[in-house]
Every structure is written in structure tokens, then in C-alpha cells.
Image (cartoon, rainbow, N blue to C red; front, side):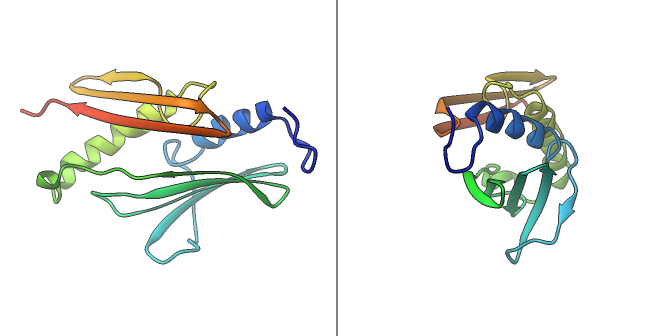
Length: 149
């Protein structure tokens, strides 16, 4: 579908989202100066496209991803996630979990470039994602299942 005002196709947006996510948080993207206090931001640019992932927190981490095309905001996604409160403060476990999350996010489906794949497993870690809708309007939910000794 073509947007008459900005002249891009939905498929181009999907392709850019996939590439930007591969080069963002999960792909060890480069942090930039944040626009909001207390946040970290990662930006990826290519041609007329700009992706920015902005998040705060550690054990609970809300965030937002936005895409600009020709300096116009055309797409946004908000997310929030965190660990069970009993795990707050466990830096080692959090670090292992974030390493696993990055692997899951890098395995995202190119047709649904929002978060990770429907299922991803490594060792005792399992990731599941459910997305309904399409890139213009969707709802997703993800969860981790982790066996701890």
C-alpha cells in the first residue's frame, strides 16, 4: 500500500523495521544522547529512514520505538516488560536474561518485525511471542519461561 503524502510502501517500512531491529538494541546498536532524562536511546538511520528505540529502567523497562520517514513520524510502538519483583537486584540473572532476549530478538520473523519470533529456545530459556494485526496496527505479547536451579 502506498502512502500518497510520503511516497513509501508498507513493504519498505517492514524491511526497514527488520533491518533497524537487527542493528538496534539486540544488534548492539550505538547509543545516542537521549531526548528524555533517565532513558537510553539507540538510533539507526538509512537513507530517508530513521529508527529510534528509547527505554528506561533495568529490572522493569518500559520503552518506545519510533520510525521517521523524511523526518516525519510514521510508526510507533510502545512496550514494557520486567522481571518478577523477587528477582530485582539479581544482576547476574538479569544479565543472562538480557543476553537471551537479544538472541530471541535477532531471530525475529521478517514478516513480523516487531519483537522476536513466535518461539525461541536456548538451554533453560524459552521465549514466546504472539502478535495479532499487521505493521500499521498490531498488538503483541511476549513472555519468557526460565528454569532456575
